[in-house]
Image 1 (spheres, one colour):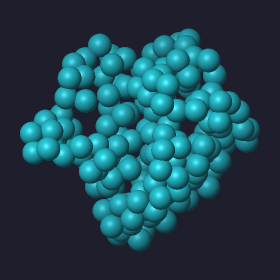
Image 2: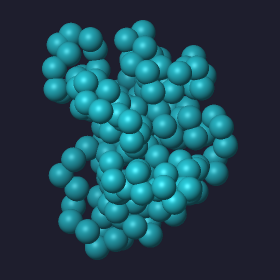
Image 3: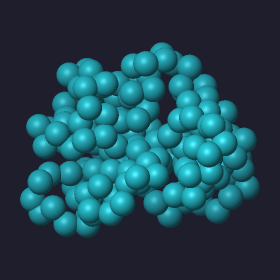
Image 4: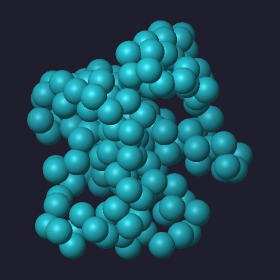
Length: 167
């Protein structure tokens, strides 16, 4: 288990999504926190959902806790790197939420997770974003988990050279 700052590479990748809107020097990454997967299992049980088959991270304030070491360095820059960096981007969205609105983001995220379970992350994909924009909805109208997955998917598409216009 170790706590660290963002690497220069991770910070550069995060800036592609958040620009200068995060105080990066305050961000901490804690790798090797297995309790985060337990949180997901308990949440699934509460929502009567199957036990998750994926790792779960938890961001509290400026610190993102991951259950394992991340593959987020520039080499190799293969699919695993994109997946872990995109996961980090989702968690950095929660850091952004904390830095801009305080701990209220935690309450909103927990409320969404408890009420919706895995559906808390569903924003409808590309079409959902287009529909939301057409109806005048803004990013702030979505729950914190949806916001995190929008940032995650934007980053993944950006890195793969795909269209990001809906994002």
